[in-house]
Image (cartoon, one colour):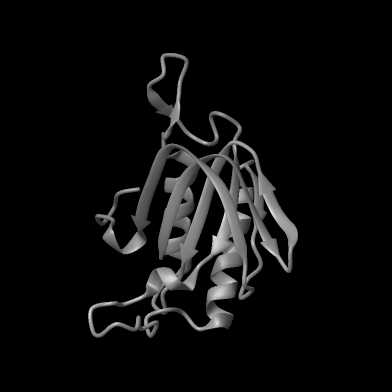
Length: 153
């Protein structure tokens, strides 16, 4: 499971020109789900994301998490994060989870984030979306659940 995180002052997602998800200060999470991803991958990323210290404290040091600042999450499913561009010029998406499996893990991920007491907004699974954001910093971080060391969270 891959996640691209961007610290934002605000972000929104539209489908058919209608805003369906909108947050103020927090993190936009672009989430890609691979065919071999599991609930453990989702749990690992949830724990990492909600506790990742990427917000400034009173001394202007990056030392606070989205939980600490009572920020919000906008979670957008993005299968293109699973693109394999090593051969040719057209990305292969063979590693992306099938839609039914991906949707189940995506919903689990969203529910787990919300269970941490964070306000969560979402995009629409399998829809063409328009995402707008104001990246604060800029701060952009890429996480991959497959790159963790055994036993570490």
